[in-house]
Length: 107
Image (cartoon, rainbow, N blue to C red; front, side, top):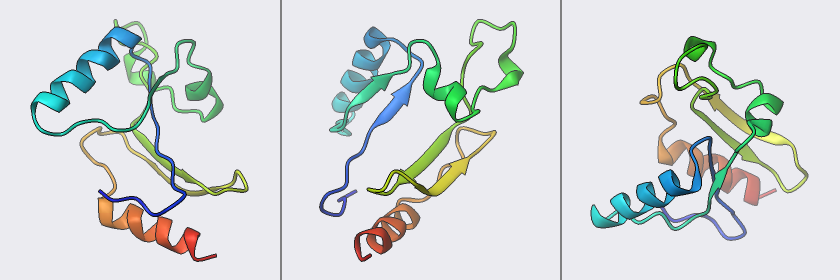
């Protein structure tokens, strides 16, 4: 996916540095290199700030896992697009995200 100029992309995970490095390596081997930073929300601060902690995992070894979420945040710091799902396989389509980004960059 080619991002519009001045767009920055990050992924945030509760998984540690080793897991993120392994994920990046596996994707690169499959021909899908991760070219953006994978950030580690070690203490769950971002998850808590956005209210994303998935209660279905309470008492489970994966406790603290967030709902799968996608946000687009404008230069002014305001959220202009949000998608939160119960099912991690239900993600916004790239075309939808690119449309929102193009509208944002045209302002």
